[in-house]
Amino acid sequence: MPERRVIVYPPSGTGGRRVCIDDQLLGAAYSRHALTVFLQNAGLTCRAKRVAVESGRTERHEGGPEVWEH
Image (cartoon, rainbow, N blue to C red):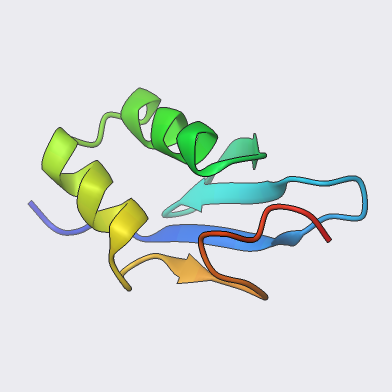
């Protein structure tokens, strides 16, 4: 099964970051936990979630995994 592309966009002016998998918008995450829940609800396995959240395979624009607000 091919890897899915996870993109975490820059923090918005009101807080939170848009999260997409491939071309599907999942919503706005306000924490690392929220990102994990989005990935779980999108059907990623436990291993795939861990890789996406903890590795460099997730595209993060304007901030790393600790940045959730502008």
